[in-house]
Length: 267
Image (cartoon, rainbow, N blue to C red; front, side, top):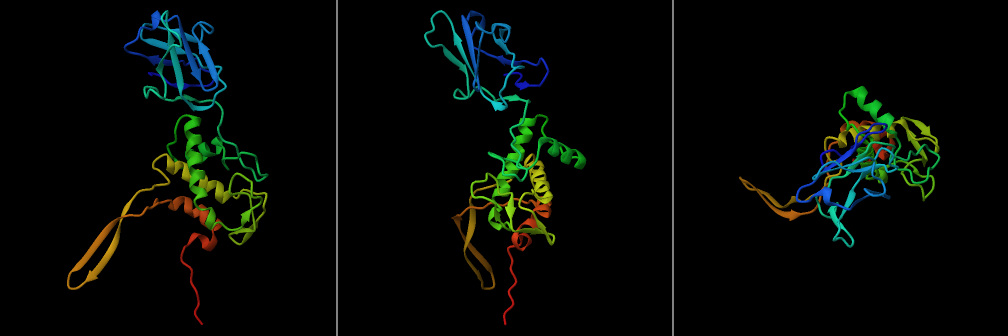
């Protein structure tokens, strides 16, 4: 694939380049793109054989959103069901990025069905631009970063102040019984601190993974007898990532201000 970006209100076509097949010999070429189907016979202006090795696809009117695999089926005079010549299953196709629309459903405090974000793409762009952060050029890629940020915030829910308003809401907010910086937060409000934390985490996710898992060496024994000696065993898991900038926003919403250290007075 030599071009896989669909741009709103532009004539950019998705272009596939093949080897080992002669496209001009096809009696039909069928393209499945998400829930949509196009064919050379039925949609000759949309599915165009440009040469023996190059096929262009006009997706300017697609209703699909995000990153989507296309499956292309080649048919000739000897075909019964056709031959799959490019698909995710064959491992020779990249996702087509449709830079149209949003994959985000914004929670505004009213308990929105299927909500998956507290912040919009416009808010993410404004936040990144003001701070000079580099972010992806297309909205589907930026949306994915915002979803990764939400995934990370989910890992903090057990430490959050208050409780969910209802058990069936999609996200951890809105909540009731929350105070931040000595002020109560209404159960219909998404705190600015939470939104800023999501935006900061989304920007960070562009540079590195937020949730990291793996194995580490754990100390089995340790001794000091003139010489330091340690032995290890492999195993265990860890999730360790520095999110200091986001924590500045998030900590006021967490119990004990995000600290795991509790001080107890002994009488």
